[in-house]
Amino acid sequence: MTKQNIDWGNLGFNYIRTDKSYVSDYRNGSWDEGHLTPEHTITMSECACVLQYSQSVFEGLKAYTTEDGRIVTFRPDLNASRMASSAAWLEMPAFPEDRFIDAVLRVVRANESWVPPYGSGATMYLRPFEFGINSVIGVKPADDYQFRILTTPVGPYFKGGAKPVTLKIADFDRAAPRGTGHIKAGLNYAMSLHAIQQAHREGFNENLYPDSATRTKVEETGGANIIFIRDNKFITVASPSILPSITRRSLEYIAEHYLGMEVEEREIPLEELSEFEEAGLCGTAAVISPVGKIVDHGREICFPSGMEKMGPKTQKLYDTLTGIQMGRIEAPEGWIYEV
Image 1 (tube, rainbow, N blue to C red):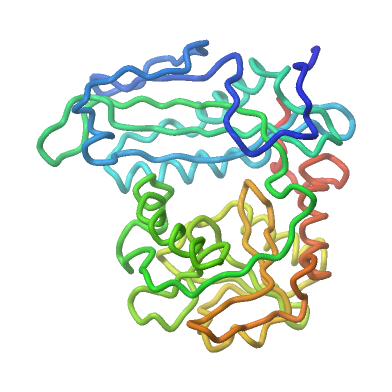
Image 2 (tube, helix red, strand yellow):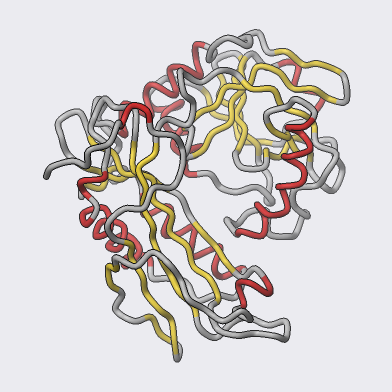
C-alpha cells in the first residue's frame, strides 16, 4: 500500500480528513449492519438530542505501524467494553462489543495509506463516538442513535519530547461522587473547559482535581489519570468517580510484570504529594506526560525528577509500553490486534 504524500515527521495533533469513516444507525430498537462511508459530515435536526442535552459518549485509540511493517491496534476490546459502560449510564444502546472491534479493524484497513510509517513518530488516531440523533425537546433519552468512527493521522503529542508539566490544584470540582466521572462522556469534558482555560491563563498546563466530597484526596486531571512513583512502587488513584484509563491499566501490568515494581491502587491524600519521587499523566494521546511540579494555592510541590525530562522509572514505563505498541517488545496475550 502506497502511503499518502505527507510530511509525517511534522504532523501536529490535529484533525486531517481521511478516505473513509465508519457509521451505523440505531433505529426501531436495533443497529443496522453498518458501513464505510466517504462522507465526513453529519446532517441532523436542530433539535437533535445530542445538541439539546449532550447525550453522547466517545472513545480514543490508535493504530500503529510496527517495526516489522504490520499495522496493529492496541487493546480495542477495552475501548469497546468501556464505551458500552459509558452508554449504559446515559441510557444509550451500547454498540455491540464484537462489532466495535470489527468496525475498528475495517476502518483502519480502509485508511491504510493514512497510517503513518514506523519511525516517523506519528500514529493514526481513532475516535469512536455515539450520540442521540433524533429530535427531543423534553428531557429524555433519544430513540435513534448514530455510532461513528473517524480516523486521522497525528503527530506526537509533544513535539521535541515530553517536557514535564506544571499542575494546579483546581478550585473547581471535576465530578460528583455518585455522578458520571467514571464514564467517557462529552459532557464531562465540556465541564472542564472553563477550568482548563483558567489554569492556562494563570500559567499552568493542567488542573489536578481533588475529590469533590472532601477536597482532601487526589482524583485526576481534566483529561487523564495521574500516576506516582516512590520506592519502586507504581501508585495510582482508587476512586469510583475517575475514568478507568486503558493506558493506566496497561502501565500497571507493565510495572508489575515487566519492570518488577509493586503496584498500589489506593486513595492518595493531597498531603502525601510531596513524598513522591516521580509523577505523570497517562492517556492514549501522550502515553505518559511527566509532571514536574504541582502548585497548591501558592505552595510548590516539586518532584525530584525535575522539570527537564521524565524521571527514570517513568521513562522505563513509557519505553516499554511504546515498545509493545510498536512491536519492539513482545506484548501480553490479547493486547495487540493486527489489521
